[in-house]
Image (tube, rainbow over all chains, first blue to last red; front, side, top):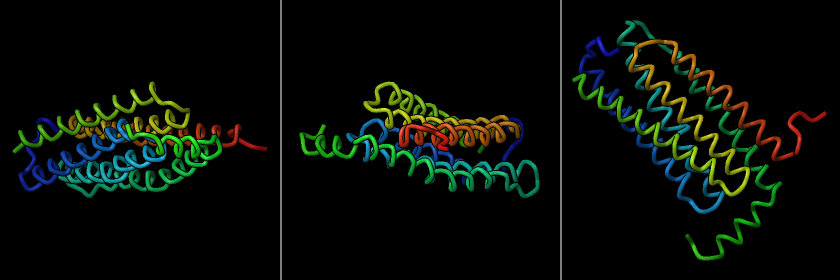
Length: 115
Length: 93
């Protein structure tokens, strides 16, 4: 793609989508690092898994359509796969946390001083 | 116009790399096992996005298949590790 000149009609929206997706993913990862308890930490990575992935996949679809001159829907496979699998892993992890007594630990920690 | 697009590609790749490094750091410092599994989940999603961005940079379609494979195996890893932490057994009789 480095040798093909994209028209501005595609380059600007795709670039904006890429920047937005990268920012959302990075914010999600920072939340994974910063938040105090496990139950709070469950939430931020889903930002990258839904909105960040959606933005970057849309940019990828636009660029491939312009470069290959035909409609490309391969990226929807990844989106569909993530939509199916992200709730399954979230449910499994939450049930693991409940079975391992994380609820009591988080309650005790959130009653103390907030880090 | 391609200057802006190349900047956006570099920016998105840098964000994905930083997110992956943060998630790997959380794998090492995570206080409990489910924290580490959750950080692994975040790390593979970031790696998949990085592969998509690199595929847009190079114009090759192989990176897309690699991203699909990473999503598949990452889900299998997360689900089986979570199932093991949940029940103590991955495939129950």
